[in-house]
Image 1 (cartoon, rainbow, N blue to C red):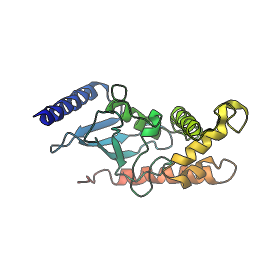
Image 2: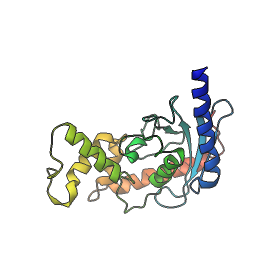
Image 3: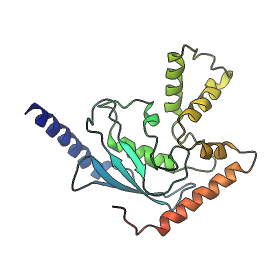
Image 4: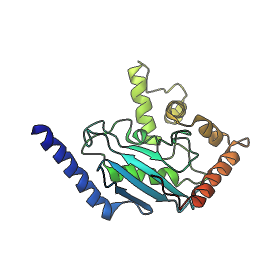
Length: 215
């Protein structure tokens, strides 16, 4: 009986979040839970500006069984092919947790914030730093890792400017598509241009497949 009550309470909290999304979901993001499970959601993101402008990106969102407990970060996977440093090139899984400093906290983090992160991540301009909204989370995560390893967070090993080298190192450690990240960072060669071409190709594919509904 106790386990049933706990599950019912968790389901109720998820339903409250869904009702909240009806009014507060980011513009251009549409999402619904499945008929079979409150923990399996399907969504679509219409990208209206930046490098991926015009993209119609389908994604799934899965809530862990323990959600909304601490550490129960939702799992987001693009079903549309997306060329992006923080999207796994084979599975389409998105690195969401780094936007929250590497730690999901109950009572602070919600589904609506995940959707805001997803939208921000895909609204990229050609001048934007491709930490893609991860800068704060990367700094926090990088410093935590450095403290754990016994290093100093003061000097950063790279001189002034707030430890930019450490931020880049942290970015490389968590990038799900390292080749894409390297292309973006290649501003002196052809890498950045190649990245933009691949991003636009993803947009074209998403438009061509807009009427294909995954199961």
